[in-house]
Image (cartoon, helix red, strand yellow):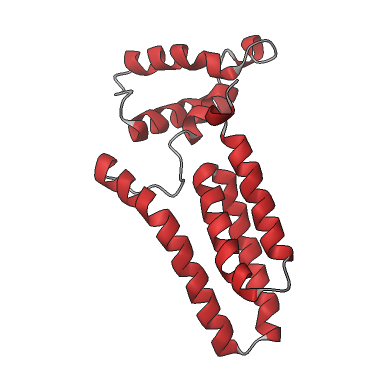
Length: 168
């Protein structure tokens, strides 16, 4: 397994960077810049990175008591600008290529949901890496007329298939 193909290492690094920045009480500037930067990059790496944003909100609520409100608002706006600067290029790319806006930073959420929630899950999951199931998923999508090169269409299809399996 190549580390370069595993976003888990990057996500772990960004999580540690986030925790370090959060605990660095000596430099508020570091926190103003690094917290939103690490959170945004983690969010783009894995959808679960979204969980860092409420922590940043709590961080600012705590600082509201320590700093003047005007200064806190300025720092919050700087943090928000950093988040938008990091996330906007991806959102622009998705919109330009697929004519849609996506709340999630990845186009694999439906794929991942389907890999763990489909009729074959009980058969293969304990024994086979779910990533080896991709060819069968591609075949199913093509049988249903889904353009497998269109990431948004692919994601919507796999998400609907997984949701249908879960509900039945």
